[in-house]
Image (cartoon, rainbow, N blue to C red; front, side, top):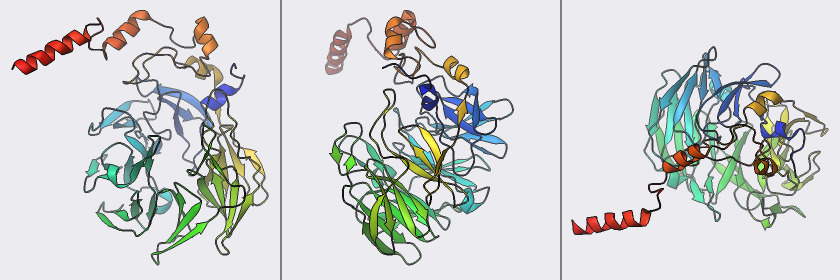
Length: 429
């Protein structure tokens, strides 16, 4: 079906941060937008020649009069002057020749003050954890362990699954994939050690409560973990209730993984948001009782034709530790939510439609791995591509030939002959 009139708004949607650092965002490929007030974003500049997106984390941070852009697929940090958008690049060691270098960064102003001094770039496929000093812009590689083999497992569908990590009393912890070990990094000094954790199983989500409670969400199953950090004791709670199921997306078949997204705390209760689960759960740790929480935002598997509904969504806690929001993935919309009354109110985030359509890429260089293509999207649906009605750059035959010549060593079609002659020459040496 054709895109609906307002679908473009959800395609470029922004999820507001709980810490109110919403001055900037990256969307529409690798393009920087500025919040001009009340979450009204306007285009500033392109950050890369590649239009495929995901090169950078969607949430830049403005600190000390500089805008820092941290990498996802990229292997560098950008520093931008907010007055004229001049871009300076801090190169990292080029350790990969593919995507998926990093999976996020740390920033804890509420725990460490307005200047936490040291931030960490969390690796995905990158072979080490990187420490970034905001004062000196020095990058330090922590190489006392092999992180990729420590805290990740490869799922049956090839996905990379990072284990839990969290901050407690100036220490950043990374749990091993088996739960048996723990990396302990002092965020003030950078001192690192690996010690026994004594847990069992894979945990993919973690949240703190009441200062010393660290709650863990499982990769598989419905058992929550609770680590009392001050006493170093561990509890488990199975919150399975009647009718609770996990429905894999997009295949829509029953599964045992990814039941839950995250937690929200309301008095003594915990509200658990569904990821693939078919309901929200309300849980009382004091009694161990769990039941379905009837949410004003239903856990649905319905989807739009132009984006996947990969999850119901997740809670966002405001920095005041009282108010909550919920990012509702089926609508690509963020809501203020009252966990007591269940009242919800949309959080408006706006972009300029004409500006957004002018930025639609058409045929372009998506990345170094996709040198020339036009992706079917809300801006270029299949019917429009077939009819030659392209938003953005139209098809150019010579550009395509040049692009694929850069990745095809033998565009003339004589690859087999070249390989034969090369191998023959090697054998005759």
